[in-house]
Amino acid sequence: MTLKTGESRIQDERVDIRRSDRAMLDDTDIRALLCEGQVAFIATCDDNQPFVLPNLYWYDPDRHALYFHTAADGRTRSNVVNNPNVSASVATMGKLLPAAKAIEFSVAYSSVCVFGKARIVEDEEEARCALQGLLDKYFPDHNAGEDYRPITRNEIKRTAVFAIEIESWSGKRKAADS
Image (cartoon, rainbow, N blue to C red; front, side):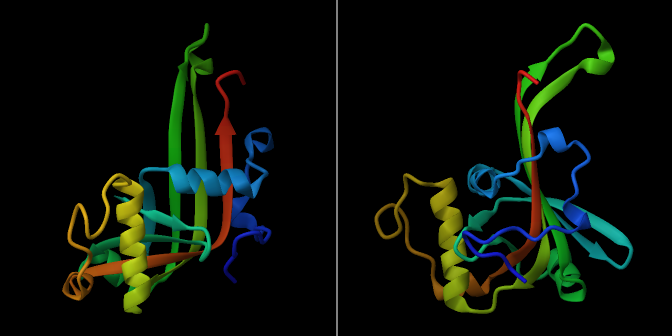
């Protein structure tokens, strides 16, 4: 089951948070961090060997999915084909928080962890939308057809676009004053 905008999250053991005082309880906060975050660390697995790779990504709130792309062939593709279960994490780091005792040093942060199924996007229009979403996110001052040539069909075929259909998520936050 994949969540859509406005639906309640699915709670399962994958998203249990030990420090409930730091839990983001409002899904709006989680969506905002996914929209604003810069890098997602995406975990796939090959047999019993986990792989975590940083990727630029785009969160589509209407499809409730994270999109990213890699080379057309490679480890990410083979891992997803063999095991679509993935997780991804996005975090921001805030103010460093020194303390009188070494054990109490800390940092302000926000983070989200998502769990879901990854798939290779086969539909050309969905792939184009995802790639354009990435361009719009990271290059908001550049416009297709004005500042650069729009994505071509051949370019879509040269890359592998992935969607992580989010099944569950959790968010945590530590404020500078906590």
